[in-house]
Image (cartoon, rainbow, N blue to C red; front, side, top):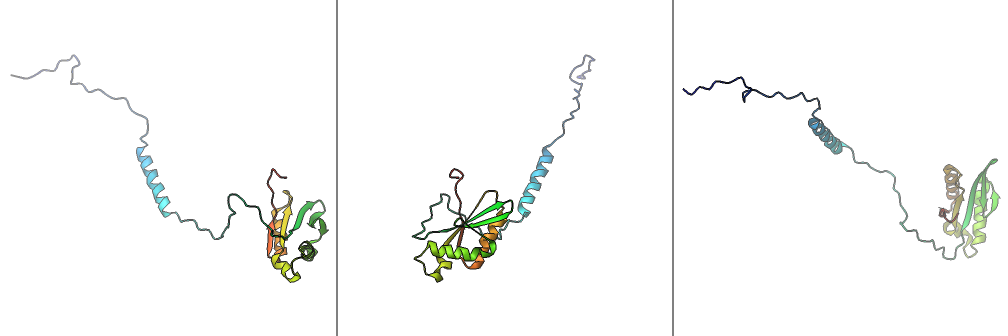
Length: 160
């Protein structure tokens, strides 16, 4: 008969036991993270911007003033407070509008006095240590006085 008797010599009938594996299986964890990432990407609101910003061109072109001489308003913080200059003449914030008008008329004799507010260019220049709020305050005060073309005088770091 064809019966086979297993011998005790350690033949093929024994199962090899594997050592326990202590490494965690991270594949399901990564799958869950990817699903959560996709859910958050789909449900995240699209950012909206409420403020329109007009950026200058990448290579700034020098301003052609077409015969108009700008009036320079200088701002400097001193130990005694804020110093404001109109074409190197010290003025107070309360008389800034009148002084800027007088200097704009003097710098641009070709303009009619009634066109000075609309056409004269006013540039505000400040030290690097001057607080931004002071610059904005001076610019807004000039615009409240009626000057239409108020800008910031900037120079490159290599020029200063």
